[in-house]
Image (tube, rainbow, N blue to C red; front, side, top):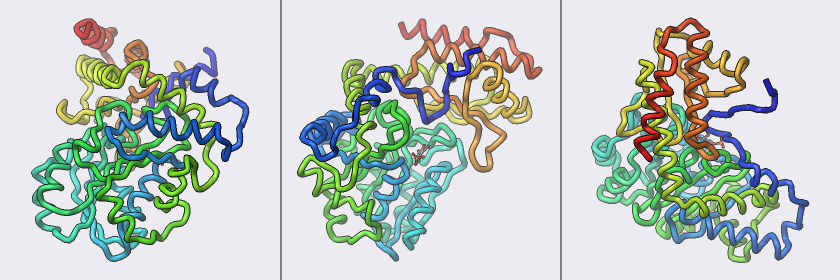
Length: 384
Ligand SMILES: Cc1ncc(COP(=O)(O)O)c(C=O)c1O
């Protein structure tokens, strides 16, 4: 086995395309140079279609959580009320960030594996009319649920004046996002998922309505002050030293997304989801999410008492260099999650399914070898 040949199928970080890797190896340039300014404003412009916005997209040196925190600390102040919708670990993170800043959080929570529905949110909005913001997670990575963001947004706009703030860290660039059309006020994401880069960049786009609120607030954070980024970006620069090499990589990523075409990128992710789900079903493995809310970027499987998910992951990792994710928090040790996002295609999906089958057999769980692969192949063939 080639030790360095890792098949990384977790829901982020995801594999880096060779041309992106090469771009990041370019010699360093001055971050206040005209060359960097030009590159930054180009990529910030070219990334807008992935957000579905005409607004400026800000590129932050930080992991996704920095943008989550930015969306909280710039829009709310201590004592304000907010609704946080929680369908898993990352919704809970939003709540924790809010609480750190003494924001009064109303948690709208569903079981992991379920989605937040517009009906639930509507009732909750009526119960909490003072909420100044509603936070939602587009893809809840811990369960593989894709929450119905456009429908949730409609409900927020109809029943409140709250800002609607969306964590799209584990799906933006892999699924449609129409920030302006859907009325989203803030959308945040990170670099190490569908954007096929290493961890280290966060992105945030802000509506005009959100800016009105932001302008009234002096945030209790220095590095994450959005107004500083807006001021600098007007001069094609950043307030603090940017992650120059990651921006070299990003330049390549936006070119790749453009060459494939966003609709095709979304269709590829949809296909990989359908292949993975068909395979798991054919193998009799219980999926954690309904088809309606299944994310195109990550599939969670809950084997229950059928076999030990950790034993499966261990064989995959040690014998075949395939890395899939386990569960988080209370699902740690119980479920497994297959990432199919970013630099990943149907060929990769067939490989991982095939090796899951082999590994299941090797941990003593009887399956019909090839049943999952066959089901996935059929989805692929039907797709054409
Ligand atoms: C939905 C979601 N939100 C937020 C984060 C946090 O991002 P980071 O780990 O880059 O801070 C993640 C990371 O996995 C995520 O999947």
